[in-house]
Image (cartoon, rainbow, N blue to C red; front, side):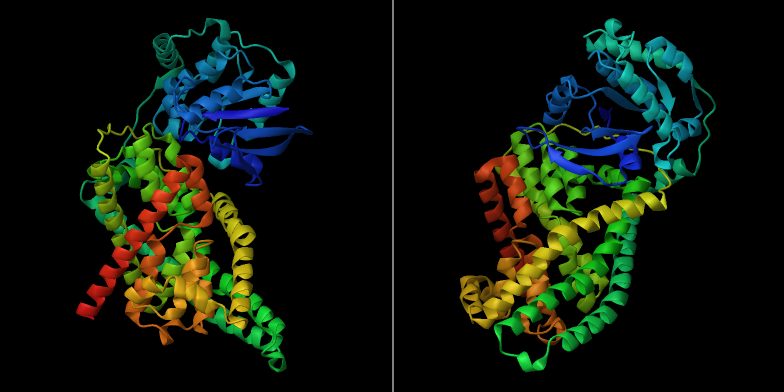
Length: 568
């Protein structure tokens, strides 16, 4: 038995899914496409059912790839019941999508989420009356707090077992304008507007979305996030490094020095140490902070503030979405470009998204720049990154001229995040590092130890000596840059091995540390991102973007080096 969750963006559909899946979910692609979905097995009243979280969609009749595959998926016989997740504060819009679902002739349950927000707005919804009119269960829900979740899934189980066709299905017109009118009429009949009072959320938006103070507060919030991540990371890194270095000295016997096994064991311990003492101390607080900003509802407001920048770059306002996702991981950032209608916009947005410093690059920025040069310098690097992205976007859109439409952006209400949700979301992302990236760090560390033992690292270093020589970097940094293409954290881990110490400040100058970090932030994205680029844009698009990132990395790093030499 399979339940499908369908809803508009920002309606809380994925929040409902996470309430029952507990982040124990699998993500995959629809057959023959790169559009992703999430599914999990859930026990409802003693029966195990599969719950599928379909991509957020405003309509099933659009040409967007995500909307098309969602429509095809729902039309299949694999779905026993559709749970339409609506926004109680926007009843008419939620009903329009529900009407399209009813037209499919399958069992439907309407879950009116964000009931707390509707109450705040002074709205009173007659759920029983609406249910009687449509002939389907209409249930209140506050997914973020777990209220009404059980009732929704029990109603869905009953509807799936009975397989009764909603009585409203034959009455739903295929014409979007009639559907729109009917939704408006029912919203007026069953949603009664009371007195709305301006609260702290409205006053907060006056500040956070202000044309001047909004940007000031954005910088302040980002600086606060950086300072917190750096403070926590530094407080943990120093004692953890000391502990693991002592452990390595105890576990690696000195009498075995010079043997291949001694080198392999030492490389293994260095990979474990790097993940535990250098990457995780910064990655964990960053992901907690990012999840908190996301759950509060601040990130869509960042998109609103940055929309004007997108248009100056010649892009559609929706292109901000890949940029925001890119700070977590470039892979979903590239995949999200499929929501853009024009191939030119998808190419430009994907190219720029690969320049966004993801969480993996965060380890390099904080492990080198913030730790040795200070968190303010790390923030300067992020601001410089935005400047480079803006300039690159402007150049690309001039080379590929095309008119871009405006942005209709739906800003969700502020929500008080639950500790459980923030922890679960952070763990879900941290698990990706521990399961996928960390083993690769250890394997890469062992491989580098083997190459050093057989004195083969010089060959790899010579391959990139034109870059390292021009940038004034140590000859040994070539190997870390090559392996960084697999995972960006490898650049930091292997840098320590290549230089023979994790005290980078003792063997590299401040300018070299900054130049190395700038190059890592911009050059060829990781292997997983390259695969995503190939799926979305084809091999040619992937190669063009890879070459572009190398040029940008080289130019920006050279600029930084020249400025540093001139003024420092």
